[in-house]
Image 1 (cartoon, rainbow, N blue to C red):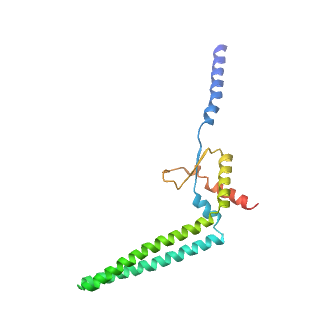
Image 2: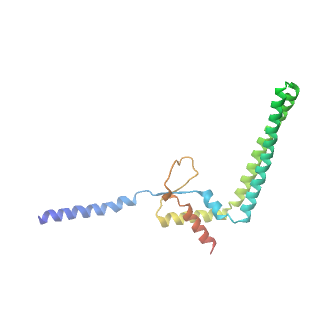
Image 3: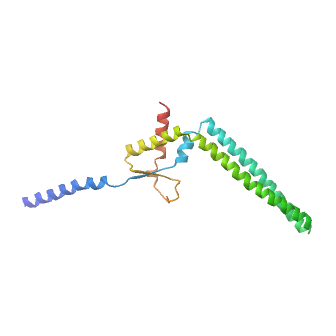
Length: 176
């Protein structure tokens, strides 16, 4: 009977010795929402407020042009209803021109906003962000961190989202 107990004890100890080796080989994946971290970190920054003001100005400008386009389309519909073909042709030309202008305006404004936002993402901030991600990953036991805005990610549990931890680390570093 004693021999069976010794064998069982040996088997259990052997299993316990193998389990940690297997656990170390598991990959622990974390996810980060870079935009959320960035926006939260810079929320009170004058540069971000300026960018948001500019974004609102550009959107208002685009909305005005959309209203003009809608008004032209309404005029065209009324002209078509009364069979005013020359007015319909004139309005068609104006609609085409305004549509092209609106597309170009939207593209240019988006590029301008993207450029301003890239200026905010300085090399210094990116290095701080990378350092904070590395610190959180290493101190929390993550072996891989993926950006949540990658198209290949379909779903993840909130437990692997390290955005708040990285934001806390960035604030900690900034307060020093």
